[in-house]
Image 1 (cartoon, rainbow, N blue to C red):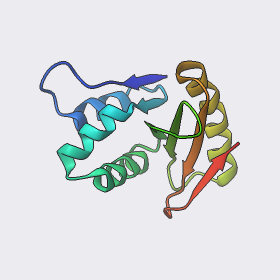
Image 2: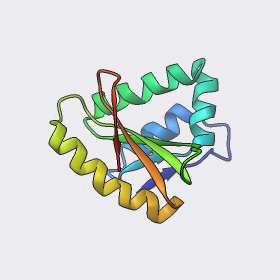
Image 3: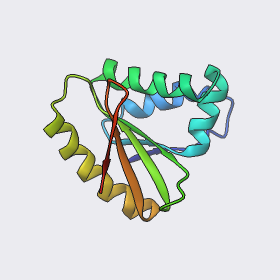
Image 4: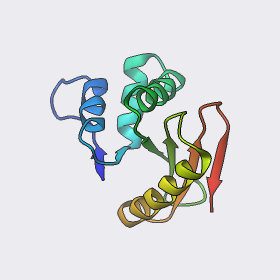
Amino acid sequence: MHVVHLPANTQRIEDVIRAAQGSGDAVLVLWGTFCQLGNELGGQGQATSWLRELATTTGRPIAFSAPSCDSACEAHIFTPPDWSEDRALGWVGGFHVEVEAMLGPATVLHERSDGSRVRLD
């Protein structure tokens, strides 16, 4: 899994995330990095839309972590809109295992292209 942290230099977050997405690994954008992306793009809604569009244009899933009251973190995962629900949920299930190994107990939410979400338990 490729975890995206805040860069130590002045590189734009968009460029760092785009490069990670091209690595071929599953990508998890950490919360602080997601917040910085939101600052660069004009808000968290714009950051969410940008990540959703990146999953669409690259044909690869991408995720970001967020704080959670119920677990160590939440992982929000965007899959390409042309993926079937079964394919998306299968990929998300495997990713869930990786996220928990790295960050501890996690709530995983599949963010569908229509804006709805499915929580994996």
